[in-house]
Image (cartoon, rainbow over all chains, first blue to last red; front, side):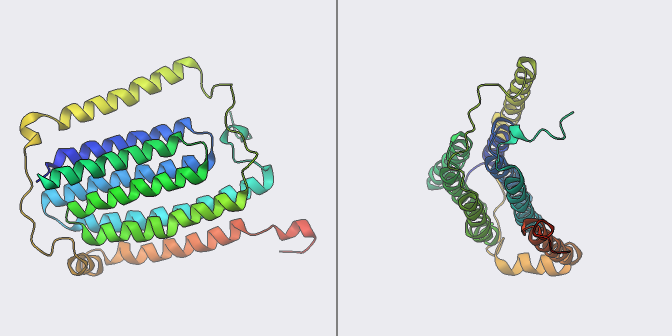
Length: 100
Length: 177
């Protein structure tokens, strides 16, 4: 039997890697995938707590998070395609139109 | 014992896959590493008795979302794009603060979680149908029926939004609307 904190540590590591990916990467697509990693880190924590508390409600939350992630991926990739069409690049450093 | 071995194998694959994903230059390799990470995560889900959600993770992520990513990467044709600019993204102070905050976050979490007596807090024995399709679906269609139905509206909005945003602008070619 694996103690529950192990899962939470894996979840924390995944979340920090995802956050670092969003901040460090210049490629919009890799930034986007890092967001997916962060969402899944949260999913892992929810599933671990759900198992620990012996309640299945967490599984429903994860289901809903996955639906949101799918919607977000579809809209986000459409935005990336539009940006690429207009600026011919997906390098995040080159989009500074709204930079203060 | 066997469970621990599987856990460590899957955990290393999940974290390592995610790490390799953000270190890759080539976005296609990056997507493939993300698939490794997600499959390992699905193993962890199944180990936590979340069989239905684990299967869903593979079907929805590896089957749909990452294929979408691959399509977009191949559509964009990024061969000539360079992401290695010498100029750093942030100034030194910001980088230092971010590094300290992230490291502190990790240390705090691991210290809190890895406390010896709490480390051994085992989970209660799950009922045999915990996390299978029927109980999750019963919960989804009774207690959480409104969030579930709202999700369908969200997906509809996402479909329409994606199509509207990604289609070619007609006004450029002289047509109206």
